[in-house]
Amino acid sequence: MRWLWKIARAVLVIITLFFFLFPVYWLATTAFKRSEDWFTWPPSFFPRYWTVGNFLGLEGGFFGSVTTAISTITPYLRNSTIVALFVALISTVVAALAAYAISRFKIGGMGFVSWIISIRMLPPIAAALPLYVIFSKLHLVNTWWALILSHLVFTTPFSTWVLITFFNEIPRELDEAAYVDGAGIWQSFTRVSLPLAAPGLAAVATLSFIQSWGEFLMALVLTTSKDAQTLPIYLGRFITGWRIAWGPLAAAGLITMIPVIVFSLLMQRYLIRGLTFGAVKG
Image 1 (cartoon, rainbow, N blue to C red):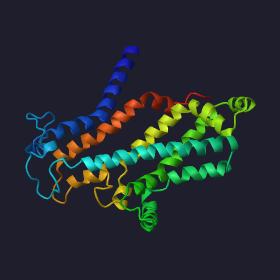
Image 2 (image 1 turned 120 degrees about the vertical axis):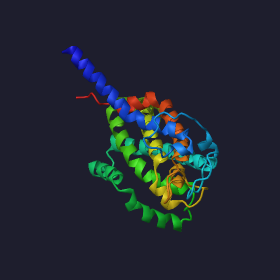
Image 3 (image 1 turned 60 degrees about the vertical axis):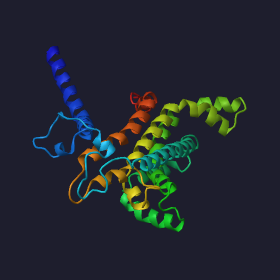
């Protein structure tokens, strides 16, 4: 029966890998397909002719589309990178301070903790209009800060919630030993608790970066030009009322994936430790 279980497990692994990796494979191959192969039926799973025209705009015009190449992606890539990095940094710092205060000094009690996580449950569309009015009064519409602040509304509560667990797992005796040695609250936080919570900090930074990178609704409502619009808005330019420019869309999607994959790989070791922290505790 053991061999039967191994076969079933191998089949399950293959099905799971196929389910998650096939969309990536399809995206990558479509990015290098010629325009006449975008809509063929049955679809071509492995193109006979490969081209970089979708990246360079060499595949000819596309009726109804704003553009046929991704040569104009640079401003949007810059905006997404800056916004996501600032969101990851600010969200992690604010969440670490809030989580430490709640964990060590019970500020606000469980009611405050529940209120924090309830903000994360708020549908983004419910906050879009109020935020637009506020940012209009502050003259922040169509700026990076409008996106950064709006993304923080949703990333910081989740980061705080995760980090509370981390700080709860760090023995209070370590802080008390630091106090005995003459350290203050800030020194105990920065020199004792914060280094021990490094996996959690890396995990919430990565999750905040990914969430900000793929956010679409706030970018659609709060930005109007390439000075602040991010990559999700840029990808929408290839979808028209007539047709979808699958080749350039896939090429732009491929470019959009790369920074997230690189950032996740760099943080992978801490991310896995952070997401599994305390998972085996009884």
